[in-house]
Every structure is written in C-alpha cells, then in structure tokens.
Length: 352
Ligand code: NAD
Ligand code: DAU
Image 1 (cartoon, rainbow, N blue to C red):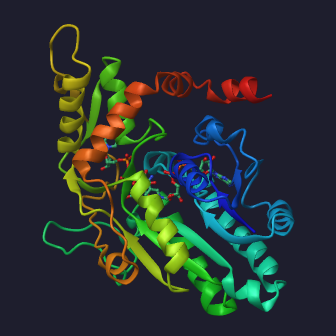
Image 2 (image 1 turned 45 degrees about the horizontal axis):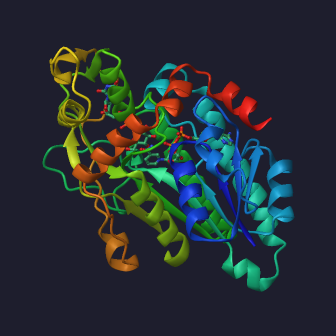
C-alpha cells in the first residue's frame, strides 16, 4: 500500500516526503501542480528511489486523483496542496478560492468515492489528513491565551478564509459521510526549501544580497515558529495515532515578534558570514507599509497533541533558526535556481 502526498513539491510537503522516504520503505506518490511555489528540485534526491513516484497534476482533477488512488492502492492521503502566501491572497484571491476551497472539495469527493469502494478492513484503516493553519483562528490580543482546538474560526485574510473553508468542508465530509479524516492546524514553519517570498528566507537572502529587510508596520506582530521537520513529525504522529474526526493544533511554544526574528537572523549571519565592509546586517532593516488586515498575534497551544499523542518538537527556535541559516548558506545552487526563477527549467534539463 501507498500514501499519496499532495503539494509534495512545496516547502512542507517536500520536507515531509523526504523524511518519510528516509524512515519507511512504503511507497509514496507525490502529486503537485508545480505552481510558482512547487519545485521538483526539492525532491531530486529521490530520483533514483523505486518507492517514490512524482505525478504532475491538480488535486481538483477528479479523474487523475481517482486513478492514482486505485492504481497505487492508497491507504492514506496527506493534503498539503494549497496557495499559501497571505500577501498574494490579498493581491489576487482567485487561485486561493480555486485550489484551497474548490480543489479541496474535489479531492474530498475523489477520496470519498475511492474509500466507499474499499473492503471493510481497508475502509477502517484509511485516513485523509488535511494540513491546515493557525491563521483560521484570527488574531489574538496581547493577553489572550494561545489558540487551542476549541477556539472559534475568525479568519481575516483571503488566504486564511480559504483555509477555514477547506477545514469546514473536511469536517463536514466526516460528519456527513463518515470519511475518516484528521485535521492539523499548525503555526508558522521555517527551515530548508522555504520559498523566499516568506519572511525568514526572504530576509536571509536579502541580507546576503545587500538588499533591504522589509519589516511591515512596527514589526511587533508575533508569530509562533516551528521548525518544519517538527511539523512533519507531528503529522506522522497524527496520521498514526490521531482520533478520527479530530483536529490537532501543532506548535512549538516559540512566539516571537517579527523584528526579533529578523534581528536574530542578522546576528547569526554576522557570525557565519560577516560582511566584507564590517557593517552589521541589521543596518539593512527597513520599515515598510503594513500588510492590510495584518493579524497582530498568533500563538498555538499544542497541549492536546502533546498529551494525547505524546508528540514533542525536537528543535527550539534557537537551534532551528541556526540550522536554517546554515542550510541557506550551504545550498547556493538551490537558492540561485529559485531566485533566478529558473528552477523549473533547471529541473527539466536535469531530469528530462
Ligand atoms: P507552499 O506554497 O510552499 O507549497 C504548496 C504546494 O502546493 C506547491 O508545491 C504547489 O505547487 C502545490 N499546489 C498548489 N496548488 C495545487 C493544486 N491545485 N494541486 C496540486 N498541487 C498544488 O506551501 P507550504 O508552506 O509548504 O504549505 C503546505 C500546506 O501547509 C498548506 O496547506 C498550508 O496552508 C499549510 N501550512 C503552512 C504553514 C507554513 O508556515 N508554511 C503553516 C501551517 C500550515
Ligand atoms: O501561521 C501559519 C501561516 O504562516 C501559514 O498558514 C502561511 O501559509 C504562511 O505563509 C505563514 O503566514 P504569515 O503571513 O505569517 O507568513 P509570512 O512569512 O508571509 O509573514 C510572517 C510575518 O512577517 C507576518 O507578520 C508578516 C511579516 N512580514 C512578512 C514579509 C514577507 C514582514 O514584516 N515583511 C515581509 O517582507
């Protein structure tokens, strides 16, 4: 049997597939539309693996997804596929509605049909794990408690509204049709293969290239950061032990103000790659216009996942952020392909 991972060429999806293939021999089918955020180079170390199959396609393509589920006798689907950047969703929401809502709906229908035809034993063991975000809960005030699974949904951006809608669809397919689903709502990830439109990779690369490090507003918005490999281990744990129909918040208790995150990156870079002119990277910090509707504070209470499923993150923010900076410094070729926008051509040439 096999697992199907959607959005597998993106940041978290590719980390998840790489970790999975390192730990298990079970086959993995990676499905990805290869949008601007999908990068096959992330999975290139699996090219020779007989257990990994990459399929270029859309979660909304029912015929394709149905074929894959049957052909590979899929026992679990992990759905990472989404449009994910808040700023892009503000600028142009349509792809977010199409993939995150309509795409998830079509995926649910393909899975429901396949699952309905399974024999009783396989039906009982089947799982669909939907990967979601803490942004569905909206914004916290300074004194609010961290989000737990009982918080109501109050999404504020087109991105978070589209993810909230997808979570509701997933929940409804469980309540109405009995589809065996699990949902995870995770805080901000960081780590290898992160596309440099997001704060941490953007600032690492801008710092190295002598560009501005753009801080929205006053930089005192807080996010709760989790090293991507810890998110992946949480998903594996929920897939293995999670209670059907439940949602699990995932986070590492690492709430930080954006400005502090960027200053931390700067000081690690000062140490690992000091500037030739001896100035500090911090001098590149520039305050810019705020994001419209910018959520002030996110914080995740991961007690349920820790207590009920015994999950714990391995990295602290300090260890994870250092590993991340080191990864970007060590992976110049990946960075160059992504920054030049040339990574799709590069992959085609390498693997034609
Ligand atoms: P990403 O943007 O790096 O990757 C998304 C991937 O999905 C890309 O490879 C893209 O090509 C693919 N994709 C887009 N539309 C598709 C479609 N219609 N069919 C198939 N593939 C499609 O995103 P990410 O940061 O890796 O996030 C993955 C998931 O985790 C998303 O669902 C996101 O909402 C969720 N999440 C992300 C974070 C975070 O901090 N990055 C935190 C919590 C939850
Ligand atoms: O909370 C989980 C979410 O984290 C995921 O669901 C999203 O897919 C993921 O993109 C991320 O959303 P954010 O909006 O929090 O991430 P981003 O890296 O875009 O921004 C992090 C914070 O930094 C946010 O408060 C906005 C701010 N920011 C961002 C950028 C890109 C800046 O100050 N300057 C910037 O240039």
